[in-house]
Image 1 (cartoon, rainbow, N blue to C red):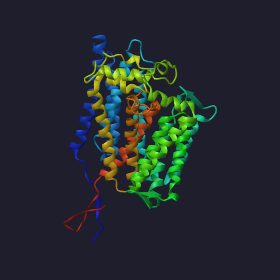
Image 2 (tube, helix red, strand yellow):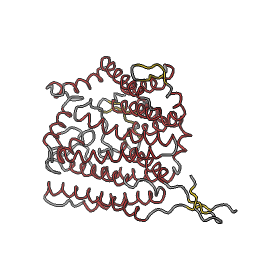
Image 3 (cartoon, rainbow, N blue to C red):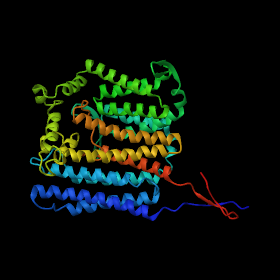
Image 4 (spheres, helix red, strand yellow):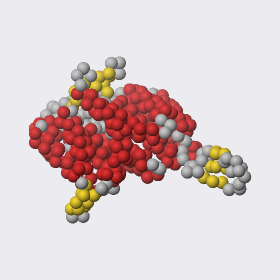
Length: 462
């Protein structure tokens, strides 16, 4: 009997057309919102709407063609969802530019350029990284890169402080870059590779306290190291956002790897205890909690740097928006300090209302759900952990931002994924989406169909 020949399973044409239609629909929604802003402000459709629409549509068509060629079996919803959120971010940045007075630094042209670069990085990632499992061999290299990127703002010459936080580096010819946005991707790769190797040891139970199996004392080393490092980021760089993001993601991936609830409880106790201790010792940490606990205090409201004006103006804006919002172009988002970056979520809430914010959160939730679905469908432990970690960090970031601007938790300085102006976060998030797309393609691709020359049956190889 001869060796069976292997042929790829053909991709249904209707599936590709449906994905392209959803992508076009997302662009149409963005253009409708863009026209709405112009009609509300100047009583006419913006002159650059066609340029913006063709540019955004062209970028996403290019991303779709790369995806169709190099990851055809990837989840068809991921790219349209990202297109919608990215496009709405462009609309809000344009709206803030049109405000009187315009919001500081609002530039839709710059953000559109960063979007183009993000699509290029998305495409390059899919083309170069044909098998994401190769990243497992770079576990400790990724960890070293992530640590270097995190501490790089503290280095002389290239480090740069802004608004009291040391989170920027200067690159000649490019400008400022926030390396922590790229560090989180490298650290997730490190966490996934490390936890795959050590999950059996970390899953072992020690003493039982009430209904919880506590880990052995000797196995607390990894969580204590990551905890200490996250506190170092909080104290030295004054970056509560990255500190909470990194430690929370490690705890989530540790839970995914071991299925031990005790790790989550230990992680919560460590971070809350560390944050309280840091607030008692360091003034800049205490200032964050002071604003969180007493945002209506007139003394804090009048403080120039680190005061509560930003938080209160954001709350006032969302209250003014009500259920249905004032309408795009009809609010006053320029009153919110840094509405272009940290507080673009409340600025959106004023004009789209609670209904618009809930719809936006549903888009994020659906994007996270597709990532978690990829994690469940993955066929190897590393892919499960990597997809789960990338999905969680996206959800965790949205929660931290929404919690901060609604005063549920202290403000952290993080930005809304794909919406806030800035290149670092946008580029890193496009790479994150490319990794999810690559793993989704591997998880959803049917096994090759083996056709035996002498047999009448078809065998599917796994």
